[in-house]
Picture 1 (spheres, helix red, strand yellow):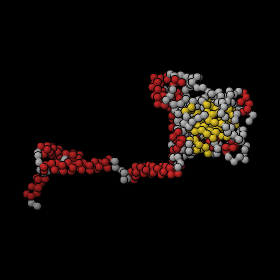
Picture 2 (cartoon, one colour):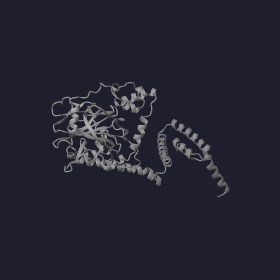
Picture 3 (cartoon, helix red, strand yellow):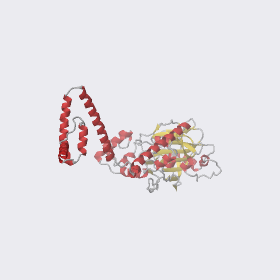
Picture 4 (cartoon, helix red, strand yellow):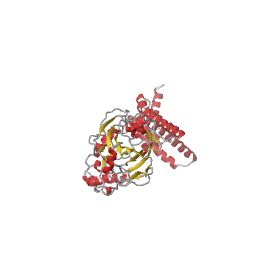
Length: 456
């Protein structure tokens, strides 16, 4: 190649100008963003020239110009999309590396597999006509959550002092959200409650709850009835279609000497084999009155504290998880009343690990049990023999929850005992739960009732 030819080619390369309307303004911007620094000024001049030429092209008329402008827009849009994809791959890079596989693709795959398993499990239950309950792997995952640590943190936070100016706003929002009737409280002034815990466990005025004197058993608390009825075998219902084990809930019947009885129902009876065993489950919502009372005149003899899980006991979770009450932490008081066996159980829940019983100062709930994940302590319990003179009267204040939870009553009564309830009914403390026979009971003599209980 001669020097003259080489000089002409170099001059042509330097003075090269792009063909007008070859690329759109969008592609020109992309080219400028990825070009080197030494050609930045030159590309800027090209960009200005192309904009001027495009404006001249818009002013011109003709069929050919419309086709050319349409083709130029499509070409620019296509190259812009490709450039965005390239930028996204560079900015969110690492998906095809080992770290991306384990930290990005693997969690997505696990979630998809879990969703598929959940769907197949529900389809199988629907095919068999059973309620949609949790599978064993779902229960293990739920129990592995740090709910006890969260409940302890919530207990500490609820006990912190709330500034006085902020109390009406905070307690007012809570009352509006959960339907709290502050006019029933002993103090209706929000500023008198030092902390959330004090507001949750507020006392009521003396005349806002009426304890029915003619009912043999009354509601121990405010709440909603989840289930009631007879317990005919070792599995009893916690809600319709979902059951739990009676023996796992109460523990072994060490108070009974009826070793020859084939079922747990017959073993725990104390008065007559002709009697039946009944149960009533009442759920306390966060806006309810959080203290609970004695439902009848009875004598507690044994206290068992099961240090289990702190799962939610809301009606939706109770319908989904079988054996929920056997898994959760609970304080169980076993004794007798005038018709035989009687038990009162305060079940803990998420954020409600602290259960306080006024007559039992040794009871300590929601204690630290370590970081062992997936281990159920539902079968481990501490037992305490209560004083022989411990009697509780009907409506007597017994204890309190921090926020809402559940009360479970399991008792022995004659077979003509009838509940005055409806499923899902909202009850108030002191309201009639049921009576023996169709007639109302007469107002009972407390001393006479105590003698009957002592004679068993």
